[in-house]
Image 1 (cartoon, one colour):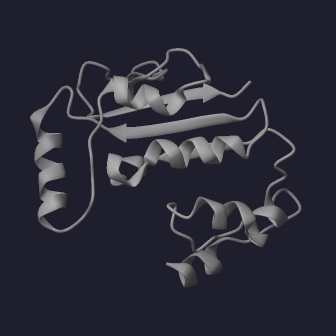
Image 2 (cartoon, rainbow, N blue to C red; image 1 turned 180 degrees about the vertical axis):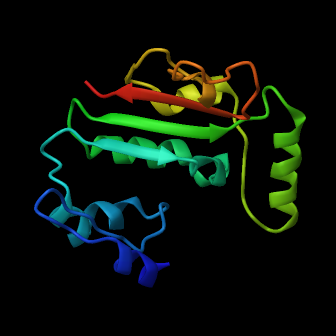
Length: 157
């Protein structure tokens, strides 16, 4: 993965990119990294994008603490974007989580209320926490189907 990232991620005058080979559990290493300091100006608002990752952090791995610590490091005006697997509307996601567990992979589906905890202290961007295909859908996007994942965006003040 690292070799692939280095080959694809290049910087230009329009913007910079970096790849950090660090486990998300090690927030302090991420925040202290040269790659972060050289790429992102944390004195300006940023977007913390945690898309399809937090469901691999069961509660015993303190995902709420990880997100809280990352949010502490970013300034007011920054946004948190989260998508997360849920079993609220379909049993198939619970079966998928069981399949992960049977292969030794940590995973946990969360309810809308559990997802809301990641956004505590933030102002939610409308329409709040929704199934991902119902969060500001483009015209013509089918919204009647159940996609077993929630999404939300919050703004730090």
